[in-house]
Figure 1 (cartoon, one colour):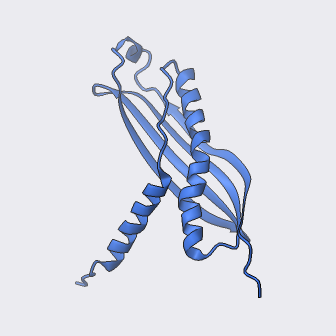
Figure 2: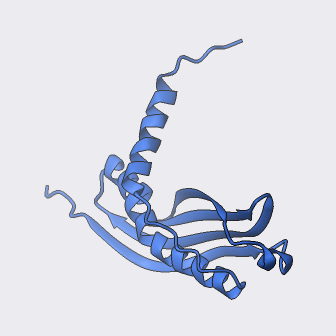
Length: 152
């Protein structure tokens, strides 16, 4: 019996949810622009139908000037990916690293466009090493599985 050939296809890429808040505008525009940027990333994957997975990359960017929020951007950038012939471990790697890496440039562009349209300097997010983030997630999962559990 021949081994099933691995196939990966991008079915669709779309914004599932997006929001922008500028709670201190227009007064914030008078402040000296020395922003403190906080970036949070998350991703999850779900089997939608046979061999079709939805992967959602969540990004939250909070920008403050001193203690005032300049803006908060949240995006759920999603994609439908067809995956055939991958072993379970390989599937985790593709869904946890390759797919978010594919979605990231779309999210980065949407965030920059929103922020610019809100009157702020463009937000240029640096590239993210999703391979390293996925490896770290796997390691943390393995460590938490190895931690002895106490029952009271």
